Image (cartoon, rainbow, N blue to C red; front, side, top):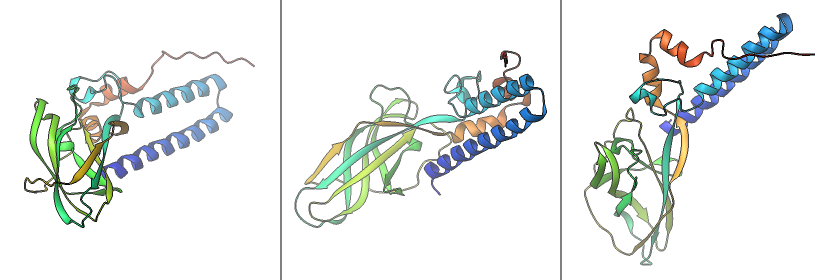
Length: 227
């Protein structure tokens, strides 16, 4: 199971747990004081909502926690490559020159997080001529792929990246190369939300009181129940 599938599975799991929590609280509301049970129900949904958010600040695992959240943003950029020479190429090293990860240097693309997929299959690649915004945060780079093409074939690839420092770098090794007679179309970057491994690891480092303070609402919720 790749990281994307793992993240989706965890999010679905959290949603299911929220539904189970809801049913439990529905049971409580039948047997306990209505106002108290409604107060608990509202707080439970607030807790679930916080966990299924990015938290505050969004990079709390790096800059300090105020509100706990386990989700974060990842990015993908579709790339359409087409064989333009009318000949079967077999496997060939392709060069995507000057691929832009983060033109505004918003620090969203750690070079260790980059992955290339086609139809949910991870492909070997290497980064060359990397230009950085700061540290290991990419601005642009040349991407080398080892893929096969038949005559006039078009293939869509997806370049994924994020600022999650817990994602280990890939260990592929492809030599630098160039190939001619290919057309390239790069589509706009798409932002996705996914479960942050880095935030899950940071959660393990929090002490109990900090975690509770970042989740529980205390006495800030007031409900008036009328019939």
